[in-house]
Image 1: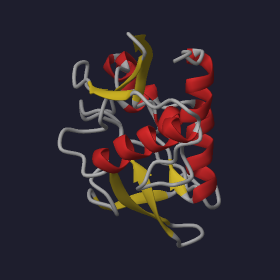
Image 2: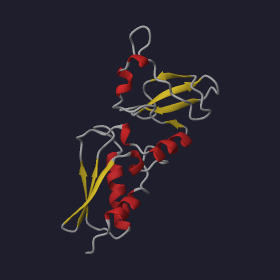
Image 3: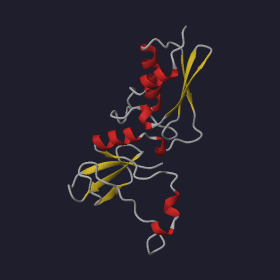
Image 4: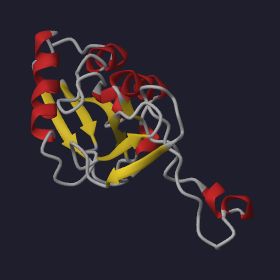
Length: 172
């Protein structure tokens, strides 16, 4: 069997939608970590967004089905849990797609040392509250209604200007 170029595999995988948020691909989400070949077997390394993510079985099946449909018949999914997935791995295009879908993307990097500087601590010695912009109208006048949204990786927010509720993809 002739091996397909890994760049082509990445392109095909960029068409595999996340089952929980179908507007974003698994590549834009940042869970596809590597594409390799070993003795004619295409090995796709994925990192779940969190341990025990119920969508991983569907994602793995979608990866295999997509590659099979393009003639890659020998596929192995390698689950890699370390380093743990972080929203820092999301592409900017993916964040834009989330916003367009009505989900506020992560507002900061997970590994963000700027919050440790004096400028980001309020007068009470606590970190400033995260400002989440409304994906519908762009307002920063929003508040968290619930730390739990439609999926465990999202929180529920409400905009005080357009009055619309929206999901916020939590940083982790």
